[in-house]
Amino acid sequence: MKSISDYSLTYHSEMPGRFDLPPIWKIVIYLAAAIFFVWSFSGSAFSVKDFFNGIPNMIRLIKEMTPPDLSRISSISKAILQTFQMALVGAIIGIAISFFLAILASRSNTPHPAVYSLTRFIIAFCRSVPDLVWAVIFVASVGLGAFAGTLTIIVDTVGFCGRFFAEAMEEIDHGPEEALQTIGAGRMAIVLSAVVPAAMPSFLNSSLYALEKAVRSSVVLGLVGAGGVGIELKVAMDMFEYQTAATIIIFVFLLVIGVERFSVYARSRCM
Amino acid sequence: MISQLQSSLPVIDRGVGLATIQLELNSINKSFPGRENILKDVSFSANEGDSVALIGGNGSGKSTLLRCCLRLIEPDSGSISLLDHDVCSLDTQGLRKFRTKVGLVFQRHNLVPRLSVLSNVIHGAIGRTSHIGTWRQCTAPGYLREEAMQCLEKVGLAHLAASKADSLSGGESQRIAIARALMQKPEFMMADEPVASLDPKVGREVMELFVELTTNENITLLYVSHDLDHALLYSNKLVALQKGQLMLNGETHSFTKSDLYEIYQ
Image 1 (cartoon, each protein chain N blue to C red):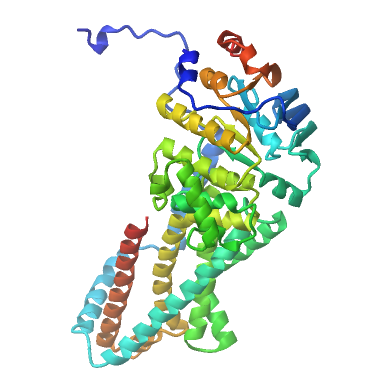
Image 2: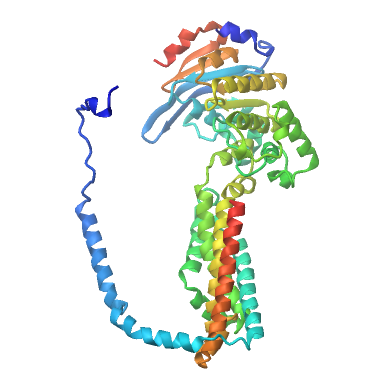
């Protein structure tokens, strides 16, 4: 029996090289990016020395945080519940708005290129402004409290889900759409009957990530007065009540982990 | 071989000769950027009740021609008359209304994944009814659900009504696609290589079912096929394209298999 080495491997065409040398302009861009990265260390004040000098302070802080103070557990539980409610309502409303905006912002479903550009701009604007900035704007507009936080989460979710929903609709197999088009279906019927079911796994995935993101955001929003447990954490830290702060951090940890576990479970059931 | 197969076919009487013209193409031309003459001066016609096989090599313009007939692709010039509609002059609303009368079965089935078989079949009625609930079987009116079950029974797959479309085999998917096309209640049926992705046995079963159903409903059929036996067996009229040009156009019985082979040379 012949082994593979017994076969003569002869060919007359030129074999392509394993690696292609990139053009000069690409090399210049890579080098410039590398130099900028190195320079960014000074801009970010990155210091290994300061990090190690800070370790004793971290240890002292952790010591002062233990054992966690459970005396205010009732008010902290209420704040945590409000945080989750803000996240849930904000994320669900944001997801619903994203769904309609994404239809207009996907190339294959938009009624007009101008509508596409406008909705893409709205989504990009919602996404590019950080959530804390939105929170400050809404606190100034509707006052301190959970409503400002909920509005912030809605806008933040629209920025996140709007983009991913639109991309999901563009990336699906367009065969079923063509089939319904030949049947004489209108654009809306095609979107509801063919596009949405095909993009649904991606919608669910993005929505669950949006909920996780909303829960994490809603914790921080309280720092600027937009409701939730964040304000409790800020007050505890400002008053040097580190044991109370530890309790709040544990509750936040449990909330975030709980939502993440639910998200993983829901994804495994739906995909 | 062909005569053996023909003897086992269902009785197909298309009553050719008594009917009026349903499809008439005159000098259809189509080019794409970088690809000239995908269709060059193509003209042929089909009568009511005909079964027309459209053959040709890869890139000969068969699929483009079908899509031009429904204006999924706009022809550059020429005229298309289908079911008494001047297809090229229809406005958006008129085009949608016209398309509801023409069924098109694709090679890749194009069923909506994740939806049930029943929902997919009900989609066939989207164009002809104004009912908003046709996008899912759970929201569709009762009479459409019943019609869809009838269509599923016609293709022998009523027992799969609740199954998900993406859980079906290739042959089952194509039968469901045929049921969806029947749900349209079309007056004209087109098929773009409907059995190309199926094994020969299943392909033949699906083709026989397809031809039998269109014959029973007296629906004119125009189908693209790479299988010369299928082209000779299931049609009474045969049209062949080569590099966008019409090479054969006539009664199927006037061609032999070797005539058809020459198209692929």
